[in-house]
Length: 239
Image (cartoon, rainbow, N blue to C red):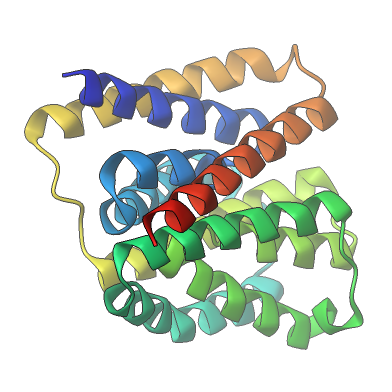
């Protein structure tokens, strides 16, 4: 019972920050879900929940999606998702924990630093970001940071970024769920996850007008960094 409540709390927090900032569900929730459910189940649940949230968030912004950038991004992600799935099935749980924690930690540090690179410009940049994001999403549940770095290098505003990030999240998580499968949760757990996602959406929307965007994003990244480092520590301890 306590585990189910904790599961709902993790999903509630992740959903809240996603609706608050337009990003962050996987970064915040994956390390905690991995610690609670194990690497495989934690990742596939994050794929399902993140995909559902992106579907809901995209409903009002579909016309703002830049298909010229999204097509190469999503096509490249589709090609590398199977590689991420293969990796998760080959590594022992301790190494999976370590790998996922390292990917989350590295991704957060790159986003915090605001990494800029000529390799992330234009169509080639979209393909590179999509390929890395697809692999990371199916292997560790966190495919968003490469997309964020691409948008940063492309000079997108936040208003431009959010609907495109939602579109990318729908597609890459659909591919990841198709590749990884569904998590083995009970009916009660699925109901709790759905309720937590709904409550998180309401909370995130309510807070969006009260918390400055820059501070909210920094909080999301610091939470994700803490979770990533914790997962790395647990992975090392289990080796």
